[in-house]
Length: 250
Length: 250
DNA sequence: GTATTATTGTAACAATTTGAGACAATAAAT
DNA sequence: ATTTATTGTCTCAAATTGTTACAATAATAC
Image (tube, rainbow over all chains, first blue to last red; front, side, top):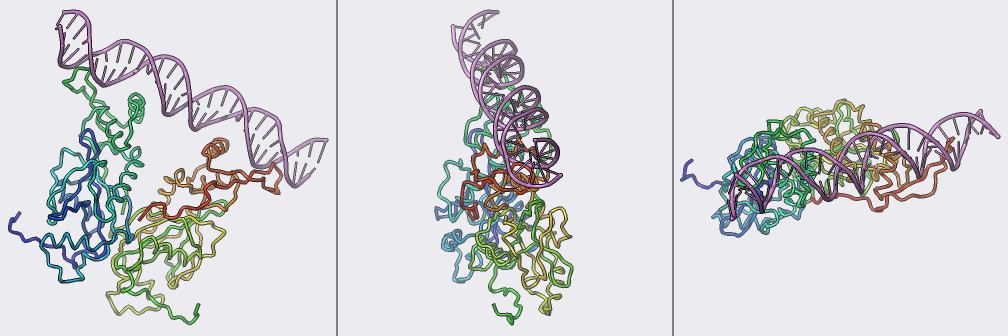
């Protein structure tokens, strides 16, 4: 990478105008469900990671590309959940502030980034410990925030997060969500903690264990040396090896 | 309306480029689940009803507007379910054939309608008997087709229909689907037939009746004089009066 | 070593929900 | 009056889920 590379705004001619994506990237730290939030240089503005779609690039590919740039991960589990196209999300002043704080001169009043955008929203599930998030050119940081402790977000990003979480909850049973938020091997308790963090409620231990085992999706391995003063739990993994990516076609 | 009005293609300056919507409009005729399909003049090409989004118009409003033009109905129940952005859907020759068959001269090789489009897909639920569908300027007919007997559709429209149906099935229990496919008052048997048509499988009568009554969403009215040689059934309606429109914000 | 502590895994039984069949009620036709 | 087709509800069986109990066991305290 060239440290002298000059900051370059995306060029209008390379991208589909008026179309963006936003991503809600979920991770689980063992206790809480968290998402990645960007902070823009010198503005105090917080936002979801997002990006634009190249003119010659499939929509889903654009999102995968953006997430790879930010997380370093290939093969991220992604699920598209809604496309936001209201005017409640159109606020060119926010974008102007962000760009000017980054030293761009916007004498060109009609810069394409200040236009109205329709945004396709995705959520991603990643293994919290495998990732070292990287900010993009306009941001000074990207950090994990617990979903109950988010800062105020720009535009309609709060609404996007809420809908992402609602969709994740609906998909919890049908889409093997745990597989993508946990490491390869995990205990039953860890799996239960993921479910509880997503649903925001406590579950009954014995019922949960019986249910999970009856689904016939887990493989039981050796016991873990817990180093704690009690019986050691079994480790489990999901039977289907491959993580699903883009389970819906596009 | 002016019968001499000249056919007019939508103008690039009025609409967001590269962005369209497609709609899967479901109706129930008492036996089968059907959807509305357009046929284009002199081409034998079949497609879902779709349209474009004005530059100063919210996405959901654009879809409502298009559906009102085609069905005459205001307040249609609409649910956005996926945004299609692959290149499998990009086939400018199809659009060229449609336009030329309608007498348009496309010497301008770069006409915006021949560009790549990303399409936001919605399904609608309407009361089959309240509607007299109207074709648009480019189509010579719009007709109901049973979902098991669709003609070959252009581009990725078959895939869009399949995903619409899959989403409708997932939403069947949580979104009061029956309310929007049936008239105000209906019998328990008619409600069951809607469920069976959507799910594509037979349901057990007694279990279905018990389940529906236990949900506490139905109001029981007088009996219907069926005119048939058996006990007359009760009529029911849904307790919540207002049909929901755009239950998800945008 | 032995008792104690904090889990974990599973069994047992109760409560609830769903499946399946039976049957009385009844509107019209015979 | 009898027959036919369907509706509404009840009952009992089967399956699922809620709840409690308890043995197993890895580390710690003594």
